[in-house]
Image (cartoon, rainbow, N blue to C red; front, side, top):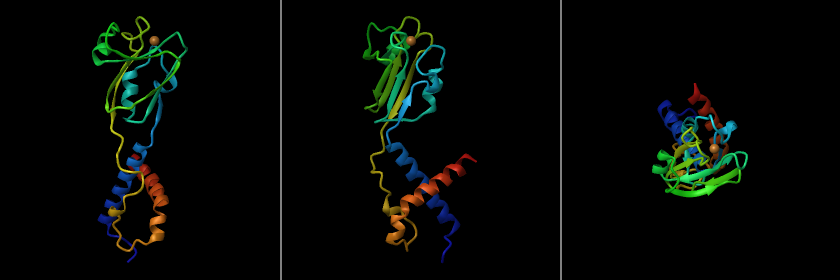
Amino acid sequence: MKTTHPDMSYIFFTIIIIILSTIIQIKSEEYTVGDDDEWTTGVNYYAWSQKYHFAVGDIIVFKYVPGQHNTYEVTEDTYRSCNTSTGVLNIYESGNDQVSLRDVKKYWFICNVPGHCSGGMRFGIDVTKASSSPPSPAPEITPPPNTGDKLAQGKGIACALLGAFGTYFFIY
Ligand SMILES: [Cu+2]
């Protein structure tokens, strides 16, 4: 028979979405801090930090006019106090600071220009583990029993199509 049981198709559909989101998570992403606002005063970086899911391998980029700001990776205590006499882990000052998120941990960033940290140029991000499974589709969760080799080859395309449809479906 051609049509699958509605429950099965729903399960398959859900699995596809999970696989796709896993693949998306594996791909390392680059984020500009503050998006179009970049790294400056008067921006809500807490809101920015909540917009994305950060995983190991991702890169965040601080863009600003060199000298006007800087990027200090600090401890949580220093993030809270804005006192950089202690708790400074890394300093970037290039104006195009690319920070690789290499560890599963909470990262804290501030600007150390006087007044900027307490004025809001600070945020923390939770960096989670990148999915350890390889990006190839997992064959053991293919539900239709008659799946041929040709179908398996087309699975990537099917994934993409279903994923696109899934995203559409998910939004509405
Ligand atoms: Cu600043």
